[in-house]
Length: 227
Ligand code: CA
Image (cartoon, rainbow, N blue to C red):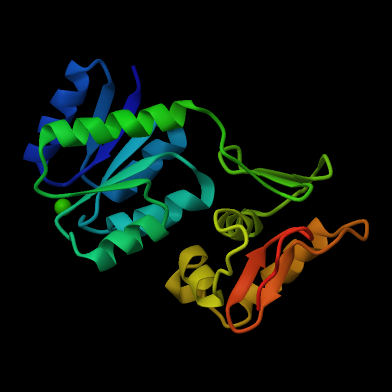
């Protein structure tokens, strides 16, 4: 039995999903606002989140962005917006899977099964040289010593870790980590500087590289660092 949170403002659909999941023995709960969903995640994190994209108030994409600052919970996005652009946007922001409305209940349940199976496999860990990043526990260590990172620093490291060896652009970091109002040109540079100070303490080699014109990437000495 797994606890599943459904964030969906179409009450008829929400009821169908709650019923279907409950029949399979899951403990499913539906809310119709993303804001309420965020509060529930904080007080009692579910095993899986089913997230509608178009919601009144905070929409599904904005919810994902906020969720990913702190949590690595699996998210299945549901939406009528089935264009490739929206799909890519959702996946970029950290959705684990995507289902376009209207969908068949069997397909929905199959995706839920697959995501729960993956979630149960345990912590997701990324290694880069002697740097170990635990994405689900939101912890990082280098050469066995814990790094004390702020929430923002970890959010940046998390994005770089999910793209090891691939440059992540400054614009992408800005968009995914900061709210519109807070965005300033040099924010990314400032935080990359902090992260380098922390990850390179004790004269350790550089792992966060600048790829000129492309952004920043996480790569160890053994890896090829391109352009
Ligand atoms: Ca909706």
